[in-house]
Image 1: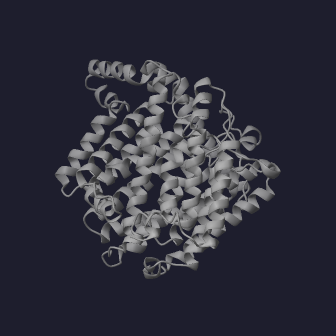
Image 2: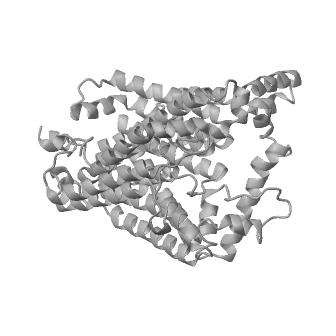
Image 3: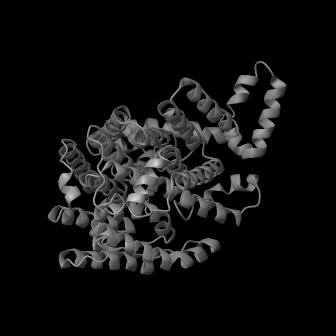
Length: 537
């Protein structure tokens, strides 16, 4: 095994080493010297404890993104929660930069250098007709984001939202496509996404256990659940909606993942071990999902799992059993049995509601009813905000009201008379993009997700065995994300969060769908040389 088999850490090409060193140092400096100090005491201590570790992780990720871009991307995905914990930013010339910015630049350097000195596997990867289309769409999204920012009422306030919320994810998604990953590399990426959120779930569960001592207290304090890793508990629900189907896919494709690990030199990774690790990630992630008390995440993840069951199960009997299992588990948090039992057995319905109240608390249970005070905010207000977003897009079709401009517009011109709350976003991703960036940008984002769905679907139809399961998992994750982004909403980015993991994962899902499309019709994958394996190449 040659030197490059060790993830390219010791490459002696000065053209590669110089930007790798500079960007690794920049990532380390940003995390160590740009650390944000939150208000909560336990977060302060945790932030200081993780700052050096996060800085070292950021430096390694930036280095890898330059010298070996695909494993660098995978390492970035896995390290994302740790880097997020540091809550880092720098503001040169008043422009907010976060670690994502450094990683995107490093990945772009890595892609450019890989084109300059392609490996045998890179040369073998034929250019797809999808690449020019993906490039045109991504660059158009970037261009529209830039113009919308310049045309905004407050360009300085709009810039970080456009940069971290739309531009960087579009560039990451494009680079992931242009790197031309093989099927095995896509499998590793999808598994890494599931592992990353599972690691964040462990961290969040351990931390929240030190803050609350009952489920009812957690329901009231749930805003703190993912404060360090994803800032917002709703965004944590978004990440879990993506990762849980991918964890199921990893279980189904455990033999293939173990084969990839063995090819990379990890001989001790057996299918059984892979399956147990994936199952552990799944159990932890499901537990965290339940404790988010996020209705949109519960429903969207349940729908994604139903879709995955339909795609992955070989018989209708097994499909029915899996769907029934999802329905039974969902009854612990979604009070749908009460709607069935009330007309025929009111006593049983009341007993069931008392049980659900004990599990999720009275406020969360009441939030399912749009006529309740809690439900009016959770359901009705979001519908009004989405309606207002359509009106903004109608009145400002080309460039919208500007990135982050929804809040001001909603508070004045577009505030419905029946609204009782001032909301900062439409709580529906695509209408929110149309309102803030214009209809063309929203259509391009819709096109990107449509292409990813078609790609994952074609891969599911064209491939067999474990790779078919991974394609099904990717398709379910994409659909789950679109559902949760339409019900909870994705506001792309806010300057106080200092992290944009949700939109980055969404971009990687799009890239994975397109990559699966590109590789679906190809011949069976041939094992690459040892110095260009699926993990390191």
